[in-house]
Image 1 (cartoon, rainbow, N blue to C red):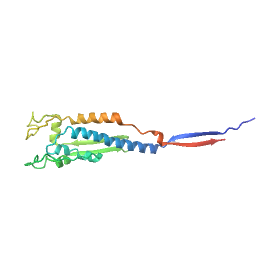
Image 2 (image 1 turned 135 degrees about the vertical axis):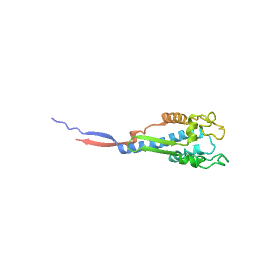
Image 3 (image 1 turned 180 degrees about the vertical axis):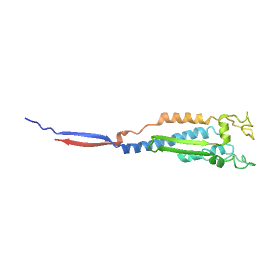
Image 4 (image 1 turned 60 degrees about the vertical axis):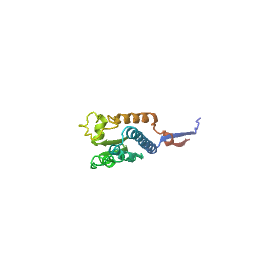
Length: 181
């Protein structure tokens, strides 16, 4: 005597392309928010405004992540100087800022760099204590060292460690019913 069995079961597979697209969207959004936290901690809380050149170096990154940064110098701060190292435009021209998302590498990064002398100098030094090396032509009300890189890194890491999650794969699962017998 032989018995026949009917078997019904479901197979499950993950729609990898769908999950990767969701992960990319989530991590790109998270990167932009984290860069905004970094910008807020470094630019708005640490970098003082005089001519606007130092804050102007952050404009490219701010634009890349949608951070509403407006930079103006203090009225009269650039009077009598050529525009080579003074004003937001000078800072903008002497900097780079961008984001890079995934591109198959699984890396999500932002980049900021500048060679604006006064910002680089004041990041590590107090120009009031060494005015010749800092090319100081006026006493600074908020002298360095700014340490904005360290402050920004700490703010970025705090934000990322407390908020970043990968998306759930459950919404990318595909079920298929199979019947045998």
